[in-house]
Image (cartoon, rainbow, N blue to C red; front, side, top):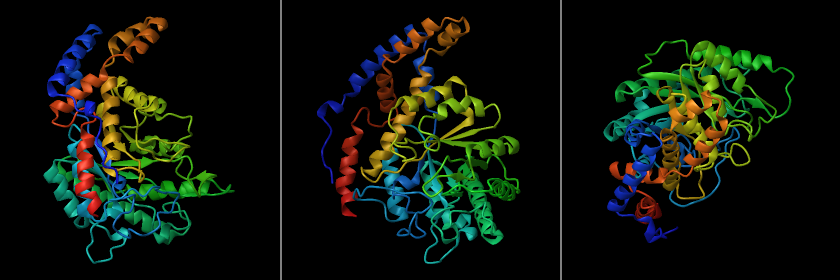
Length: 431
């Protein structure tokens, strides 16, 4: 295990953080940016941390089982969570190092059923009671996902679009149960639960009938969503994918399918940053789909050689996502979640790095002189627009971020790494 402490320079005094922030606030003001207003908005942004980063997408139904459905986690960093209590403790540790109030995104196969075997179509809210109690005590909202993989009835690569009506009905019932669980979570926690449906269905080689599976999927989804649930408790979302390992030639739930479905049924559309062609950016899609769907769910990830779900870093793509959400005025209609899993590094550090980077991308967008940029664009002065956009890249967003961390009573700079190393030494290494 690693036990190296960050460089001493990583620990900046509170006084230095505040002094640097005052200079940054003055500099931003010269460009017409209200830093205090930006920080107030940022404090209301909640990121949904994905539980599966902490245990390598193991779940507690059959932790030693095969994931299947083209899903794979690589790496063997010591100390992964083995029990629900260990996973909750690790999430608690990560949240202590992330500024703001956030959420937890939970998959159905993280149910706690004791010694009883409960199949997925029979899951109910009582199997998640400890998760809900923990979230209530921590002041967290929760989001939820039916788990349509790592199950004998998903072994042939089809679930909601399966040609066998009995198999299809099993997955319909599982998704119906998941919606009820999500609604109960939302009611208990006083915050709508986004219940997101993703399925792995598809063919490895070229099919001759692309239509029939999609017709079955549309009908199955209509059955899943048939029962109205209060939107203040549950929001239904659907998620597409371009291809998967084992479904390289055809995926039933494509982007076009789900965009049409979400628009026609007015469901939340999920855009996953790793589920498109490597040259595509989900940032480009945001303003387009927001014309037709009520709300958006983002799964923020980083694909390397496509959907490899690496820890989110502060890339141009990530910054573009933040910019599009803010520039379009979509923060109130967008649910931001994370979706990556890396077992090659400290799993808690992965949560912290990914979440802090995602928040920082939103902050950078909030600190743009957007009124001036729009004025230049509307006047056709594209030269000045480009010059100002480039100048924005040199503005001290890091100083504002460190101040935000300080005021949120979380470590600024790299100081959080000291705590991760302590937890690694005292807790993870004992597992």
